[in-house]
Image 1 (cartoon, rainbow, N blue to C red):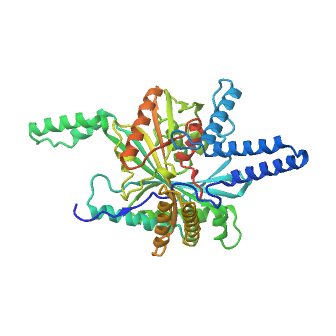
Image 2: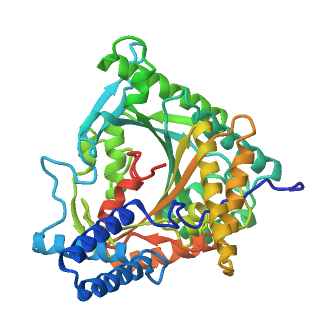
Image 3: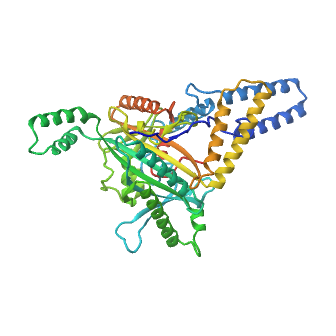
Length: 498
């Protein structure tokens, strides 16, 4: 284990950078509309009451917009979520939030599914999911997704050199995929963690003992299997690619018909699989429509095995359960029993500020005790080098302006501006290296428990504790919107914007 561990600094960007000191575009538009209406009323009435009332309302709006909850989130956003949740529940009048039928859940939207396989291997089709761009109401500006299963690398304790090598290979993987020549703008890696039944683990351990083993060794192995059975887990990993349709079509010479789109998507997935394999992650299988649907069904109802295809005809069959939205969880009416799920994200200001190694996320993946059903989804929005350099340059410019403003006003710094400037400088320095580009990472965790919401509460506490052990200061649990947040943990390529 000798040698120095290669480390990474993830923290620093503790807030959104904007031109007007943290004011978002929506806030700026709202403030402009308010000032315009106020000025018109003031000119029309020439009233002192209107003048003073406008000042009071403006001051109150600024105070409300800057108010934070006890967890550090926007108070107005949490108020909006709570009001929207209660309004939707009142409209449903106790009915389920989603009942399987003609349409998929609202957050899924409209999708088209194509099963494609080249003539050489027609028996193993790949599922290509076409997602409609609902903001523009257009299929042509939507995106495609494809999912394949990989065999994870680096189980257990590894030598320092192996950890460093794995981290470097993953860096190069992301940097290479962020090339403008490859029509992939997001890579999602999801690890599904499932407890192994104690009897199955004991049977596996007993099978490792040869017939000629001494009785003392047999007894020792039996005791060890008894102690470890309750915390034994199984890990399955899946990669989902997000491919912008417009970018893909631009790489096709000639007419971009359905056959050419499917063929080019297959080639793109093949190129990514080769690169992922080069980074040390072996391909297990590319998921077809039925296997992808079975995986989605399993994530809703863990009693249904992800490899069981009974009752699954296509991807849409994965949403075949009645769903109830609650404040702290979403309840799924499973085939055998109810399941409770909760989703959390890692906020921007919660990433570790201290240097970490390439395996700092293992606390969420492998160090949750007792064994807990969970999905850890790491999403990487890929940004080409030229755009990443420009974003970092603009960010550093904003930070310098903020620092000078603090110095001019003789304000005591909280350290956020300096940390943000340091992050921008690191990005600019890194972009001078070969095979390096920009990445916007995001981590989401879905935890599940059967039959009893109290079991889910305990599981949430375990996940929060594991995150803190890894240096993540807090998890943002998606209360009032867990039913919608589930889409960010499914193999759909949703949830991250550059």
